[in-house]
Length: 172
Image (tube, rainbow, N blue to C red; front, side, top):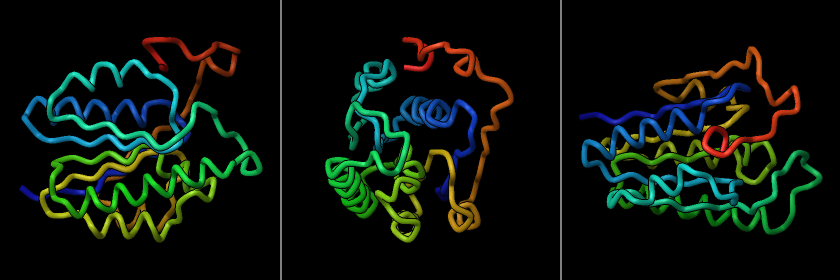
C-alpha cells in the first residue's frame, strides 16, 4: 500500500485531534505510530491514552510555555525544535513507523524554529510505507502544493473568544 503526505492546517480547532484520530485508527490496525510534537510541553489527556498502546511512540519537543509572538521565542525553544527536526529525520529514514505525525510543525515554522526547506526535506525522506501527517496553522504554499491531502480547518465560531479557558478532556 502506498503511503501519502497529509496536511491539517487552518485557524480552526481540530488539527491535532484529526491527526490523533488517524493514529487511533492506525494503532487499531497494528501500525507503528510516532507522534512528534513541536512547541507542546503541557500535559494533555490524549497523551495518557495513547501511551498505553504498545505500538505508539510519543516524543515532545517543547516547553510548557505557549509562545504568542516571535520576540518571545527563547533559546530553549530553538534547541528543542532542532532536536525535534533531527529526531524526525532519523525516524523517517529508519522505516520503523507506519505513521508519523509532526504535530504543530507549521507553528514551529511560523516562529522560525524550522524552515519550509527543512519540512520539504522531511517530506522527501518519507518512504513509500510511511504515512506522514503535518499539522499546524499557516502551512506554507510550497508544502500545500507538494502534499497529497490537505485539509483546512476553518474557524466559524469559537467559545474561547468569549473567555472560555481550555477545558480538560476537550481542549487538553
